[in-house]
Length: 270
Image (cartoon, rainbow, N blue to C red; front, side):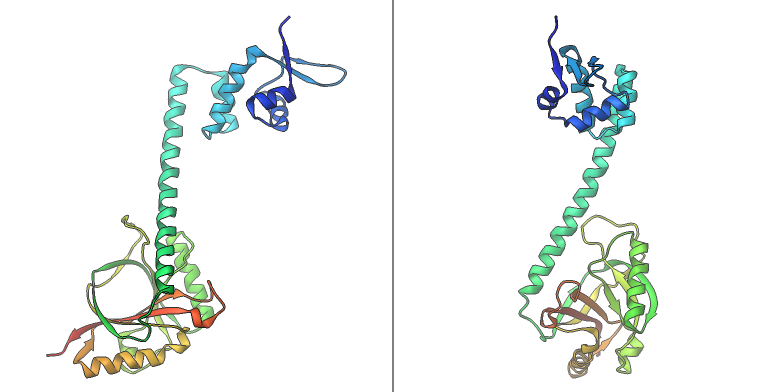
């Protein structure tokens, strides 16, 4: 007489929970060879080991229960090959998704760590920046509520949660020393891969830049400081000023830890 194995023994041998084995029985995926009519105890034979091993392998590969049941009922080399190709494609897609997530984490970690080490606060500098592709929403933003709504719209456009956004004020508003309202909000890709969603650019060129700690309503003195620098050094703004929110209340309630950067595209006046 062949040795029979209880459901508990099968659970330990295959590292599959008893509840899962009972569920497999209920959906006719993997049934015991014998069930005691009085106690309801389930028993399995060693001849079933290969079948359960196959089921466990398919589940570990991410194959759904429905597909697992179908492939077990109609197992042929052709069906199995098609299944492997399908799961391989899914795995590659998931790998690429996770790689994008890892790149975003790495980029953001480096950015925040660099920001925390920032020692060039309130120091004006000129940087030559390459063209930057952005996903941009042109919309007048004059209040916190309008900003939050604009962020939600941009998240919908990007189909992603946005941790870091950039905002612009118009060059005309800058010239008349009006810094309260934004005229657009945007996000840049956080990895090196080309993002087809990008619909605009921040042009290449020289930018007068400054880091500072504070909220938007605390930014006017820094815009004034930059405008004075332009005047004293024969520069003129040639595009919309950009403000990057690097660390804000999303990360800390300590306003002393807030960090933002203003960049104004400029050209030399001859």
